[in-house]
Length: 349
Image (cartoon, rainbow, N blue to C red; front, top):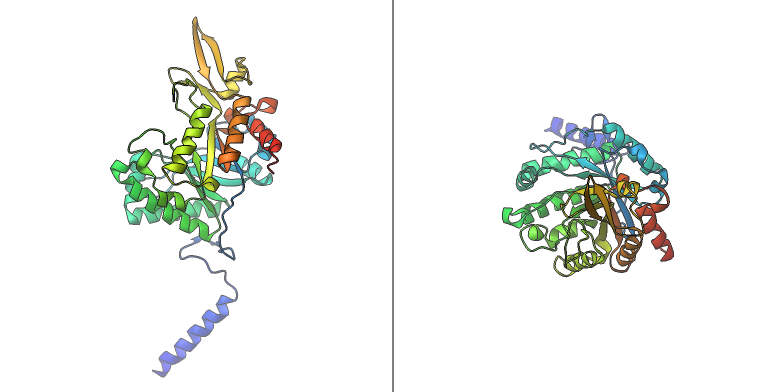
């Protein structure tokens, strides 16, 4: 008994001594020899107005004007992909990741990894508590190792008929809780929500509550209310209506998305940058070009429409988002610049 007491005293004294030198972290949060400390104080969400840009890793970083990094508040690197066992695939172009994240950090832009991938893999991972935890752990390890500010989930799409409304909620709650411990944010790219069905019902209010903000993909909806533009002003307003009135999204979490590409009647896309290179007018939303002997009309968002959407986002939401950074033009005709200029007119810092 005396030996047991003696050992216990020594053990307690050792713990007290060590506690002065260690930063306490969650169980398991070491990567190799590195331990990541939990920041002091409670997590406080950032409710400032956002300009979110996605960057697709296949595109050349050097084609993006450096001034764009001064115009955005958040950069989401697209994409990382999960494996069926909850691990993450290696990035396809790690050099691009390093380059754009360095530029973003140097310009005070918040940086996140965006996760996409197979609907079947996400469904299986989210439904299994063990695999879900494994995925969350691997996401956290990636975020901490790369000194990121957050995570964006681009699961296209949770479906209620697969019970994804329940499992997506569980996944987002688990991931949000772990991120917030380290004062990191969680966002999601979501469907426009205009069409009734299992996709619209795949994200519930509890999942929304777990997120810091929601990127509304208010595009790819040609002929909504008979407008041939796949991302019309009317559609943008209706997307906000649906997410506010039917899904329970709040203004401070709403980020309205717009496309830096146009589409034709066959649903084929052309980047805004390439449309301008083919002599499209940045002040218009429609352009007809010849493909061989055939005229083909593209509908896109020009500068005036982007300014109107930015004013709408400022009035009714709390941010604006663009897919995708390199598809936008550089210089005076940049759509991101148009959004930033409009915010300046509205005295938004």
